[in-house]
Length: 268
Image (cartoon, rainbow, N blue to C red; front, side, top):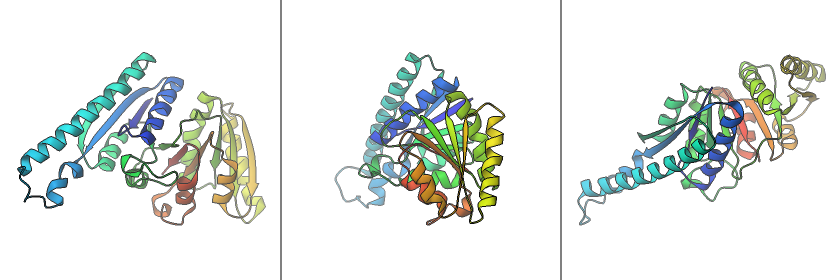
């Protein structure tokens, strides 16, 4: 199994770093660590029209790129050293580009992407998503695990399940994780018809129990996001399908991802 950790070294990303290392250790996975030099920062003097300053534009470009390179190398070396001390196989990558595009490209050849819900540009946010995380969630074909702002080791899992294609993929992604981590999975199904909700929950429960995963099937009516956020505490891994067409402002997936307190696993 290959895990990709995308980090910019910011406090929110540090939580993702620890979570990714812990998961790699528990899952006996290879860890890939990626730092992206944001090309927009390198081009910033040009974008701000600072040509009248005394420093030549190529010099400012070079200084910014060198500063980002030094930072990236330091972040990657710190994570690499920590992972190796834990006995983990690790690879480090330093690239330049638009962060969400580079992250998604690397994620396509890994099994799970781990990242923070915000980066340096959003250090004041306690909830919500940074722009890079938001764009990754909308375009990444690989399951994405968003770390909370404060690191926690998941003690349980909550799965939102409504039998859609993305929910089924979330179910299949969660099962090996829950088994390896020894998590109790609470399956939450919501429908205006309680019979339908109950059938969905039992369907997912049976699939999880085939591999010996401890489960609890819960069926509700009402607002799915409200039930998921009420049941998922800071130490619960919250898993749900997030189809692209529905991951828009106001959707259940979007609302849950932005307001969850703990780690969130989204699967398209």
